[in-house]
Amino acid sequence: MRRISLTLPDEVYNALEELAEKMRIDNRSRLIADIIMAHSVSVLEEEKKYAGSIVILYDHSRGETVYAVMDLQHDFPEVHASLHMHLGEDLCVEILAVKGEGKRLRSLLAKLREVSGVITVQYTVVPIQ
Image (cartoon, rainbow, N blue to C red; front, top):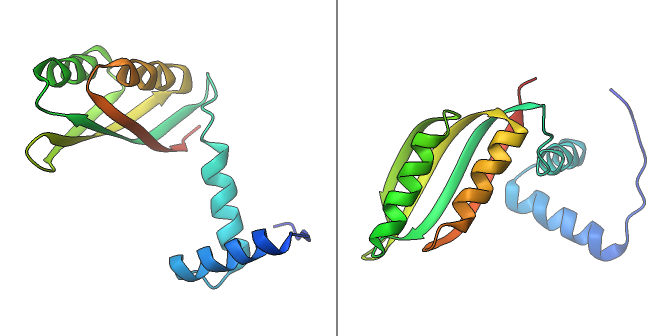
């Protein structure tokens, strides 16, 4: 474990305090460590292996969207499971459990974002190698 010292502008410090309160985390070191780790995996390294989830929000009323999202799941063996939820008449969310190399997961994310009718694609992963 290493000890460091930080100097933050007032607005950044206030944002940190607000975040700690909202997340109910008393330990600022733990909060900052969690933020750094979350940000460090936001750029997937090509050869590194990751596990996590991809959340896809899309317009269900566009039938081609449903099929395109499903086809991509079959095209990528990195998708190990999925969960589908209806959010309303036209909106659905698909949550994919994924495990694989960064370059393959980046490719899957890019292809999902290209699908017509997909509103947003978000992901959360952790390195496993």
